[in-house]
Image (cartoon, rainbow, N blue to C red; front, side, top):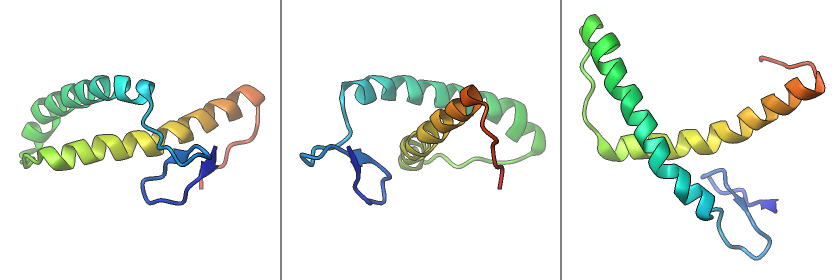
Length: 92
């Protein structure tokens, strides 16, 4: 696998095929469900209490879910590896 340099931060196989394998597609509905539950909880318990109004934007929500997963998954794995190996972590 190699870094393709695209703005979507994906890894591509050497044959040029994308990173949308069966596991990725299987996890997407679960990710959407978890984020929807978190949104509803925060809307009721945080935003309403503070008097904030959240606009409904389905495209923005889906873009956030996909982008957040692509960025946070590799970062999380790197953190787990650092913890298991006892390496010093930098927070800057």
